[in-house]
Length: 348
Image (cartoon, rainbow, N blue to C red):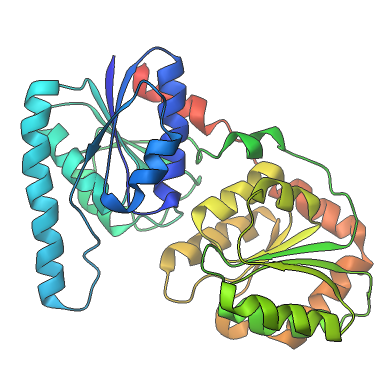
């Protein structure tokens, strides 16, 4: 079967797409992956060897400038025309889109040629691009059991599949806590200033002085945080990038971080308690954190409520009661069969 996979924009859209692409290729299907220029290297490095690549001209339309919005919409429109012509020749039998504006042209082209289209929503609140594309979609696949913001008039079949994660996370699935007093702090690829400001101060005031911190931050903040932890005699490893994120999560007893979809699903796949501080301008992250907290796996704390005083008290309580951390870890765990489920849905 000829299957077209549409992705782009960020790693949060690309890594799940690549996981599914590799599974479908292993099942013997012919794969083509379309993406925009921002993630070309990421796709090229991670795609199946047999898969072909195609490029789309797309960018987000969330800019405040009307001119930039018009330019962004023009790029998407031109890409939709180009893919429509390409689909006339290539005629894929399925389209699998992984959200974001880079997926919209492919979804439209597939609709034009009546190609069955499967759209994946990674967050617990449907994104604007997916909400727009949903009118042309046969099946919507969800990362979370409940997703807010769904349009009432949608006729798409809705299936819960979960969010695909890389194999190193699956290998560490449901790993027991090690109880080594380790905390992982991660604010995503660019770090998070609020975590850099609050976490070190809170840890310095903890009763438990045996805590070990792995703190991922922006490159320009590494030296400052290293100095702070050293001055307060706190064992810490401060770095700007974590190459083995699965290993870092497995080694931790608690994670403090943002609540992007990939982060939350990775925590659920391994089974780790967490304190999540959603980016205050991102409703998707707020929905993801709320979903995780509802499981009982941790805390959903609004950025304006996230204080050093609250965090010190919470950390003291958790590390004085390791059995509570164990309970939170068990509640956070969700079996991840997303890759197989999506591949099955698309090829049935």
